[in-house]
Length: 330
Image 1 (spheres, one colour):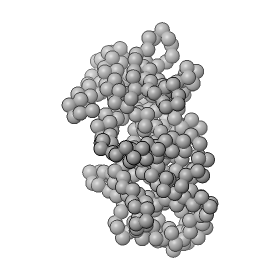
Image 2 (image 1 turned 90 degrees about the vertical axis):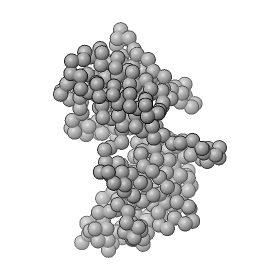
Image 3 (image 1 turned 60 degrees about the vertical axis):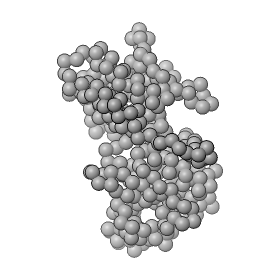
Image 4 (image 1 turned 180 degrees about the horizontal axis):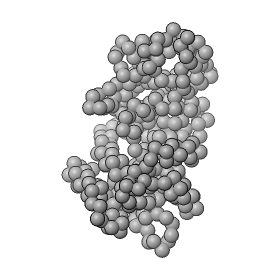
Protein backbone atom coordinates (compact mmCIF):
# COMPACT_ATOMS: atom_id res chain seq x y z
CA UNK A 1 0.00 0.00 0.00
CA UNK A 2 1.52 3.32 -1.06
CA UNK A 3 1.23 6.65 0.75
CA UNK A 4 -1.36 8.01 -1.66
CA UNK A 5 -3.68 5.06 -1.02
CA UNK A 6 -3.17 5.42 2.71
CA UNK A 7 -4.09 9.11 2.56
CA UNK A 8 -7.25 8.29 0.61
CA UNK A 9 -8.27 5.68 3.16
CA UNK A 10 -7.73 8.07 6.06
CA UNK A 11 -9.88 10.69 4.29
CA UNK A 12 -12.66 8.12 3.89
CA UNK A 13 -12.38 7.13 7.55
CA UNK A 14 -12.53 10.80 8.57
CA UNK A 15 -15.74 11.23 6.58
CA UNK A 16 -17.26 8.16 8.21
CA UNK A 17 -16.31 9.54 11.61
CA UNK A 18 -17.49 13.13 11.15
CA UNK A 19 -20.59 12.92 8.95
CA UNK A 20 -23.46 12.54 11.43
CA UNK A 21 -26.11 12.81 8.69
CA UNK A 22 -24.99 9.82 6.66
CA UNK A 23 -27.44 6.91 6.62
CA UNK A 24 -26.42 3.46 7.78
CA UNK A 25 -26.67 2.16 4.20
CA UNK A 26 -24.34 4.87 2.91
CA UNK A 27 -22.02 4.22 5.84
CA UNK A 28 -21.81 0.50 5.00
CA UNK A 29 -20.99 1.28 1.37
CA UNK A 30 -18.27 3.70 2.43
CA UNK A 31 -16.86 1.17 4.90
CA UNK A 32 -16.70 -1.48 2.20
CA UNK A 33 -14.61 0.87 0.03
CA UNK A 34 -12.25 1.25 2.98
CA UNK A 35 -12.10 -2.44 3.78
CA UNK A 36 -11.48 -3.76 0.27
CA UNK A 37 -7.85 -2.54 -0.08
CA UNK A 38 -7.07 -3.43 3.53
CA UNK A 39 -8.37 -6.96 3.17
CA UNK A 40 -6.76 -7.38 -0.25
CA UNK A 41 -3.37 -6.35 1.16
CA UNK A 42 -3.71 -9.10 3.76
CA UNK A 43 -4.57 -11.74 1.17
CA UNK A 44 -8.37 -11.70 1.47
CA UNK A 45 -11.04 -11.53 -1.19
CA UNK A 46 -14.24 -9.92 0.11
CA UNK A 47 -17.87 -9.55 -0.89
CA UNK A 48 -21.05 -8.03 0.49
CA UNK A 49 -23.67 -10.42 1.80
CA UNK A 50 -27.36 -10.09 0.87
CA UNK A 51 -29.49 -9.25 3.88
CA UNK A 52 -31.83 -12.06 2.91
CA UNK A 53 -29.21 -14.56 4.15
CA UNK A 54 -29.77 -13.38 7.73
CA UNK A 55 -26.25 -14.31 8.85
CA UNK A 56 -25.82 -11.12 10.93
CA UNK A 57 -22.76 -10.29 8.82
CA UNK A 58 -22.54 -7.53 6.24
CA UNK A 59 -19.43 -8.83 4.46
CA UNK A 60 -17.56 -12.10 4.12
CA UNK A 61 -13.81 -12.24 3.49
CA UNK A 62 -11.82 -15.37 2.61
CA UNK A 63 -8.21 -16.27 2.00
CA UNK A 64 -6.27 -19.50 1.41
CA UNK A 65 -5.20 -21.25 4.60
CA UNK A 66 -2.52 -23.79 3.76
CA UNK A 67 -3.84 -27.30 4.25
CA UNK A 68 -7.36 -25.94 4.74
CA UNK A 69 -9.63 -24.76 1.96
CA UNK A 70 -9.84 -21.19 3.29
CA UNK A 71 -9.97 -18.97 6.35
CA UNK A 72 -13.25 -17.05 6.62
CA UNK A 73 -13.78 -13.69 8.26
CA UNK A 74 -17.31 -12.47 8.94
CA UNK A 75 -17.61 -8.68 9.24
CA UNK A 76 -20.43 -6.72 10.83
CA UNK A 77 -20.68 -2.92 10.94
CA UNK A 78 -22.62 -1.06 13.64
CA UNK A 79 -23.36 2.52 12.61
CA UNK A 80 -24.48 4.64 15.54
CA UNK A 81 -23.66 7.86 17.34
CA UNK A 82 -22.56 8.06 20.95
CA UNK A 83 -24.27 4.82 22.01
CA UNK A 84 -21.55 2.23 22.73
CA UNK A 85 -21.69 -1.41 21.64
CA UNK A 86 -23.19 -3.79 24.21
CA UNK A 87 -21.72 -7.10 25.29
CA UNK A 88 -24.90 -8.91 24.23
CA UNK A 89 -24.38 -7.72 20.65
CA UNK A 90 -20.85 -9.09 20.65
CA UNK A 91 -21.84 -12.40 22.24
CA UNK A 92 -24.62 -12.81 19.66
CA UNK A 93 -22.14 -12.23 16.85
CA UNK A 94 -19.81 -14.92 18.21
CA UNK A 95 -22.69 -17.40 18.37
CA UNK A 96 -23.76 -16.60 14.82
CA UNK A 97 -20.21 -17.07 13.55
CA UNK A 98 -20.14 -20.54 15.10
CA UNK A 99 -23.55 -21.42 13.64
CA UNK A 100 -22.44 -20.38 10.14
CA UNK A 101 -18.95 -21.94 10.55
CA UNK A 102 -17.12 -18.63 10.18
CA UNK A 103 -13.58 -18.76 11.57
CA UNK A 104 -13.47 -15.28 13.01
CA UNK A 105 -15.96 -12.47 13.60
CA UNK A 106 -15.00 -8.83 13.14
CA UNK A 107 -17.20 -6.10 14.58
CA UNK A 108 -16.52 -2.56 13.35
CA UNK A 109 -18.26 0.56 14.63
CA UNK A 110 -18.09 4.33 14.39
CA UNK A 111 -18.96 4.29 18.11
CA UNK A 112 -16.83 2.95 20.98
CA UNK A 113 -16.41 -0.10 23.19
CA UNK A 114 -16.62 0.50 26.94
CA UNK A 115 -13.88 -0.79 29.23
CA UNK A 116 -16.41 -3.11 30.87
CA UNK A 117 -17.32 -4.68 27.52
CA UNK A 118 -13.65 -5.09 26.58
CA UNK A 119 -13.01 -6.88 29.88
CA UNK A 120 -15.95 -9.22 29.25
CA UNK A 121 -14.67 -10.03 25.76
CA UNK A 122 -11.20 -10.68 27.20
CA UNK A 123 -12.74 -13.35 29.43
CA UNK A 124 -14.32 -15.03 26.40
CA UNK A 125 -10.99 -15.01 24.57
CA UNK A 126 -9.43 -17.14 27.29
CA UNK A 127 -11.60 -19.98 25.96
CA UNK A 128 -11.94 -18.83 22.34
CA UNK A 129 -8.66 -16.93 21.63
CA UNK A 130 -9.53 -16.09 18.03
CA UNK A 131 -13.33 -15.76 18.28
CA UNK A 132 -13.87 -12.03 17.73
CA UNK A 133 -12.03 -8.79 16.99
CA UNK A 134 -13.41 -5.34 17.84
CA UNK A 135 -12.43 -2.29 15.78
CA UNK A 136 -13.38 1.34 16.07
CA UNK A 137 -12.40 3.88 13.43
CA UNK A 138 -9.05 4.69 15.03
CA UNK A 139 -8.25 0.97 14.83
CA UNK A 140 -9.04 1.08 11.12
CA UNK A 141 -6.42 3.78 10.72
CA UNK A 142 -3.95 1.61 12.62
CA UNK A 143 -4.71 -1.31 10.33
CA UNK A 144 -3.88 0.78 7.27
CA UNK A 145 -0.65 1.99 8.85
CA UNK A 146 0.45 -1.52 9.77
CA UNK A 147 -0.01 -2.70 6.21
CA UNK A 148 2.17 0.14 4.98
CA UNK A 149 4.88 -0.97 7.41
CA UNK A 150 4.90 -4.59 6.28
CA UNK A 151 8.23 -6.33 6.07
CA UNK A 152 10.30 -5.22 3.11
CA UNK A 153 11.48 -7.72 0.53
CA UNK A 154 15.04 -8.76 -0.12
CA UNK A 155 15.25 -11.89 2.01
CA UNK A 156 17.31 -14.69 0.60
CA UNK A 157 15.31 -17.85 0.00
CA UNK A 158 16.89 -19.55 3.01
CA UNK A 159 16.25 -16.66 5.41
CA UNK A 160 12.69 -16.33 4.14
CA UNK A 161 12.13 -20.05 4.72
CA UNK A 162 13.41 -19.78 8.30
CA UNK A 163 11.11 -16.81 8.97
CA UNK A 164 8.15 -18.70 7.51
CA UNK A 165 8.92 -21.71 9.70
CA UNK A 166 9.15 -19.48 12.79
CA UNK A 167 5.73 -18.05 12.02
CA UNK A 168 4.29 -21.53 11.50
CA UNK A 169 5.69 -22.58 14.88
CA UNK A 170 3.88 -19.64 16.51
CA UNK A 171 0.61 -20.77 14.90
CA UNK A 172 1.11 -24.31 16.19
CA UNK A 173 1.93 -23.11 19.72
CA UNK A 174 -1.14 -20.85 19.75
CA UNK A 175 -3.25 -23.88 18.88
CA UNK A 176 -1.46 -26.45 21.06
CA UNK A 177 0.91 -25.20 23.81
CA UNK A 178 2.30 -28.71 24.28
CA UNK A 179 4.24 -28.11 21.08
CA UNK A 180 6.72 -26.01 23.09
CA UNK A 181 8.38 -29.23 24.21
CA UNK A 182 9.39 -29.98 20.62
CA UNK A 183 11.22 -26.66 20.06
CA UNK A 184 14.96 -26.21 20.43
CA UNK A 185 16.09 -23.06 22.28
CA UNK A 186 17.23 -21.22 19.14
CA UNK A 187 14.01 -22.08 17.33
CA UNK A 188 12.13 -20.58 20.27
CA UNK A 189 14.11 -17.33 19.99
CA UNK A 190 13.51 -17.12 16.23
CA UNK A 191 9.81 -17.77 16.73
CA UNK A 192 9.48 -15.01 19.33
CA UNK A 193 11.41 -12.60 17.10
CA UNK A 194 8.88 -13.20 14.31
CA UNK A 195 5.99 -12.85 16.78
CA UNK A 196 7.12 -9.55 18.30
CA UNK A 197 7.91 -8.11 14.88
CA UNK A 198 4.39 -8.87 13.68
CA UNK A 199 2.99 -7.28 16.84
CA UNK A 200 4.62 -3.97 15.97
CA UNK A 201 8.15 -3.89 17.40
CA UNK A 202 11.41 -3.39 15.53
CA UNK A 203 13.24 -6.57 16.54
CA UNK A 204 16.89 -7.55 16.66
CA UNK A 205 17.69 -11.21 17.32
CA UNK A 206 21.13 -11.34 18.93
CA UNK A 207 23.78 -13.87 17.93
CA UNK A 208 23.37 -17.11 19.81
CA UNK A 209 26.84 -17.15 21.39
CA UNK A 210 27.27 -13.38 21.80
CA UNK A 211 23.96 -12.19 23.17
CA UNK A 212 25.49 -10.40 26.21
CA UNK A 213 22.59 -11.39 28.43
CA UNK A 214 19.69 -10.73 26.07
CA UNK A 215 18.18 -12.69 23.20
CA UNK A 216 15.94 -10.02 21.65
CA UNK A 217 16.08 -6.23 21.53
CA UNK A 218 12.71 -4.61 20.89
CA UNK A 219 12.29 -0.99 19.81
CA UNK A 220 9.05 1.00 19.77
CA UNK A 221 7.88 4.59 20.02
CA UNK A 222 6.29 5.67 23.30
CA UNK A 223 4.86 9.20 23.54
CA UNK A 224 7.02 10.37 20.66
CA UNK A 225 10.25 8.84 21.97
CA UNK A 226 11.94 5.61 20.94
CA UNK A 227 12.26 3.12 23.79
CA UNK A 228 14.13 -0.15 23.93
CA UNK A 229 13.17 -3.32 25.78
CA UNK A 230 15.05 -6.58 26.01
CA UNK A 231 13.84 -10.16 26.18
CA UNK A 232 15.75 -13.11 27.57
CA UNK A 233 14.49 -16.61 26.79
CA UNK A 234 15.33 -19.72 28.81
CA UNK A 235 13.88 -22.81 27.17
CA UNK A 236 15.52 -25.63 29.07
CA UNK A 237 13.83 -28.79 27.86
CA UNK A 238 15.11 -30.54 30.98
CA UNK A 239 12.39 -28.67 32.88
CA UNK A 240 14.91 -26.75 35.01
CA UNK A 241 13.70 -23.49 36.57
CA UNK A 242 15.57 -20.21 36.28
CA UNK A 243 17.42 -19.22 39.43
CA UNK A 244 18.69 -16.12 41.24
CA UNK A 245 21.94 -15.62 39.31
CA UNK A 246 20.26 -15.51 35.91
CA UNK A 247 17.61 -13.01 36.98
CA UNK A 248 20.20 -10.75 38.65
CA UNK A 249 22.38 -10.80 35.53
CA UNK A 250 19.40 -9.85 33.36
CA UNK A 251 18.44 -6.94 35.60
CA UNK A 252 22.05 -5.74 35.41
CA UNK A 253 21.88 -5.73 31.60
CA UNK A 254 18.69 -3.62 31.69
CA UNK A 255 20.41 -1.04 33.91
CA UNK A 256 23.84 -1.08 32.25
CA UNK A 257 22.47 -0.64 28.72
CA UNK A 258 19.74 1.78 29.89
CA UNK A 259 16.75 -0.08 28.49
CA UNK A 260 13.24 0.94 29.51
CA UNK A 261 12.53 -2.56 30.78
CA UNK A 262 12.91 -6.26 30.19
CA UNK A 263 10.84 -9.41 29.85
CA UNK A 264 12.30 -12.67 31.13
CA UNK A 265 10.64 -15.73 29.59
CA UNK A 266 11.33 -19.10 31.18
CA UNK A 267 9.29 -21.97 29.78
CA UNK A 268 9.34 -23.90 33.06
CA UNK A 269 9.21 -20.96 35.47
CA UNK A 270 11.49 -19.62 38.19
CA UNK A 271 12.97 -20.99 41.41
CA UNK A 272 11.79 -19.69 44.80
CA UNK A 273 15.00 -17.72 45.41
CA UNK A 274 15.19 -16.19 41.92
CA UNK A 275 14.23 -12.70 43.09
CA UNK A 276 16.19 -12.35 46.30
CA UNK A 277 18.13 -9.10 46.72
CA UNK A 278 16.36 -7.24 43.90
CA UNK A 279 15.65 -3.61 44.78
CA UNK A 280 12.23 -2.02 44.28
CA UNK A 281 13.57 -0.02 41.33
CA UNK A 282 14.91 -3.17 39.69
CA UNK A 283 11.56 -4.91 40.17
CA UNK A 284 9.75 -2.09 38.35
CA UNK A 285 11.75 -2.67 35.17
CA UNK A 286 11.39 -6.45 35.15
CA UNK A 287 8.50 -8.65 34.04
CA UNK A 288 8.40 -12.42 34.15
CA UNK A 289 6.68 -14.93 31.95
CA UNK A 290 6.43 -18.70 31.77
CA UNK A 291 4.60 -20.97 29.32
CA UNK A 292 1.32 -19.04 29.67
CA UNK A 293 2.95 -15.78 28.52
CA UNK A 294 4.65 -17.42 25.53
CA UNK A 295 1.35 -18.93 24.42
CA UNK A 296 -0.40 -15.57 24.92
CA UNK A 297 1.94 -13.67 22.58
CA UNK A 298 1.68 -16.48 20.00
CA UNK A 299 -2.11 -16.12 20.07
CA UNK A 300 -1.80 -12.36 19.64
CA UNK A 301 0.42 -13.11 16.63
CA UNK A 302 -2.31 -15.30 15.10
CA UNK A 303 -4.78 -12.43 15.49
CA UNK A 304 -2.37 -9.92 14.00
CA UNK A 305 -1.62 -12.22 11.09
CA UNK A 306 -5.31 -12.28 10.16
CA UNK A 307 -4.94 -8.56 9.47
CA UNK A 308 -7.61 -7.31 11.84
CA UNK A 309 -5.84 -7.26 15.22
CA UNK A 310 -5.18 -3.89 16.85
CA UNK A 311 -2.09 -3.31 18.96
CA UNK A 312 -2.62 -1.37 22.20
CA UNK A 313 -1.93 2.35 22.04
CA UNK A 314 0.94 1.75 24.49
CA UNK A 315 2.84 -1.06 22.74
CA UNK A 316 4.98 -2.10 25.77
CA UNK A 317 1.74 -3.26 27.43
CA UNK A 318 2.06 -6.35 25.22
CA UNK A 319 5.23 -7.25 27.07
CA UNK A 320 3.96 -6.68 30.57
CA UNK A 321 0.38 -7.93 30.53
CA UNK A 322 -0.41 -11.41 31.86
CA UNK A 323 3.02 -11.77 33.42
CA UNK A 324 3.85 -13.44 36.73
CA UNK A 325 3.95 -11.32 39.84
CA UNK A 326 7.20 -10.89 41.71
CA UNK A 327 7.02 -11.94 45.37
CA UNK A 328 7.13 -9.07 47.90
CA UNK A 329 10.59 -7.74 48.77
CA UNK A 330 10.81 -8.22 52.53
